[in-house]
Length: 284
Length: 258
Image 1 (cartoon, chains in turn cyan, green):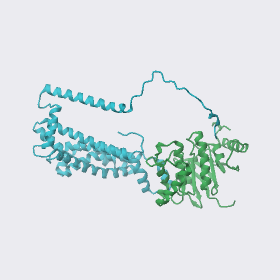
Image 2 (cartoon, each protein chain N blue to C red):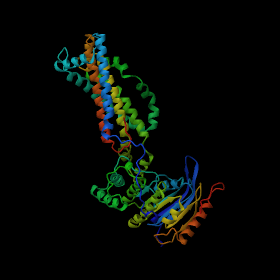
Image 3 (spheres, each protein chain N blue to C red):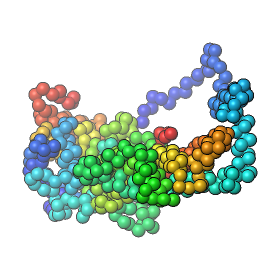
Image 4 (tube, each protein chain N blue to C red):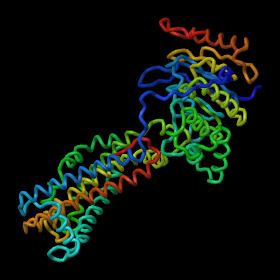
């Protein structure tokens, strides 16, 4: 029904809001935190450099010395001629293999336990104890049973499996009953519900679990490499240089480990943002 | 008209949550292409009745026959418009509407034709690539309605689909649903607690008592469409329905205002 009472013209005069400030430029707003970050980083580096120069000890290098060591390593490699790329890829490919296995096993298991509550409840006693054993505690067994890539992949798998498995399982519980009903009404099979309702619902949770798992995996690799059994790898490189008491190189190793971990997380976030445009929340 | 009923509802007893008796003998027939409104107080078991009608739930005793067969969503073509937003958030408007067709494995070319057709009918042209979270409540329900009508179902069930919309949108949607129903000629069972809506939309109004629910009364609405909410005939029917509904309430409850 048309409401005809609103068709009269009304004229307003615009009064400026008293004391209103001009809105800052949008670009300036976005750049401000970046500027602050750069400033504080610069100030921190400067303070560090001055402190290092004051202390003047080979065990406390300043940013300058670390940069020097980095350039040296990048150009000439380590004492045995292994380049930084070789070390980085050494660690990275172990992580990727172990993580891949964790993904291939973690998601189906998570779905199974999530969809089949009785099964989960009755098998908890077997699975749960493993969750709380840190991957590092498995190192002695890993040394005995495996060597080379399988050893590292095994340890990484242990670190990455549980975050992925748990996130998937918990995600299944979040499937909305009404979405299931929509599918049931149209006569969908269980398989159709699994692929078209459960998996799309759970996918964001799986990615969240992947990021946690990737973080755990990356943290584990350094410890795993410290145990020996290889001459390649960032953890290995750090141990070698610490035995030589060459601290700047050790710190270079640490920074590279941190940088790669950061990049791995960011790439997963990027994929997440593309895949989940339909969400309105921001996930971190 | 003496054709056999399209839908025969013969629910003797149904329970929920163990032994809560929800229905205690609900019987009514629905003719083909009829628009039947089922009304009752909140909590009288209307939604449960729809679950039984759709075959998602079986009554403890009794049956529902659609075209002579027990209601079964796998064998029959049934559609449902839910009260809450039921759109899949990871699909666009277009893909949401196509959901039923995809489940039933229609060929792609046909799906494209049907969805494009029905998008114009519900007035969502231009919004095909939007996601549910980007559109308003009224539009979300229009997507749900489009999805329900896309599969050319034998029976379309609606569970208070406009209850969460504002007055203006609700009136608009009521008119739209009548337009679609007239265009596509389907059998519709529309549940509501809003008597005005029921009398405005339905060929017939079935009034349920409170739990355990029975059919209190069936009222034929013979008014021609479009119906005038202000006409004395309309109001007379509405008053009669209201009185009937009020007579179903427990002594302590408030009466529905006439």
